[in-house]
Image 1 (cartoon, rainbow, N blue to C red):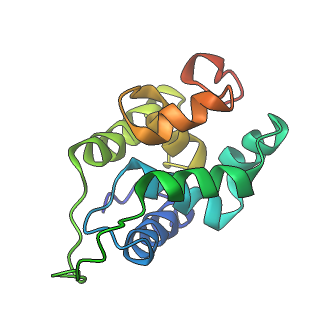
Image 2 (spheres, one colour):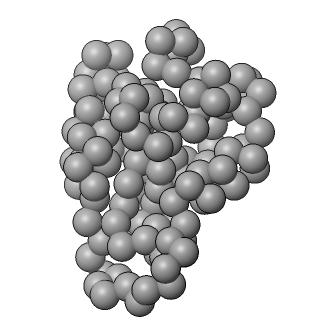
Length: 140
């Protein structure tokens, strides 16, 4: 993992893996990254969601319903969950977001901005239902 990632972001990525396993998914997607942010409960990204009056409990439930594996198939390799292409892109873009904002480390707000930048993922689509989007991200 990139040495520019703050310990908090590294922890959130670890949480996202645990969230994927808990939900029976054999991949880590942008939704899991957002669940990791919510689970952590700290950082600028969560504070902004709270300021925007996003109910984190409701957001979490909506994300879980969207991605929970209903097939109950056994997970084959729980030690190595791959990132989806979108999640890989989000991770790469977090570094660019941090650089654009002249931050020496990647923080939670950069992860949130990176998720919001790609409108094709489920996490962003659900955040849009709460009127959270990249264009309104003047909070950073």
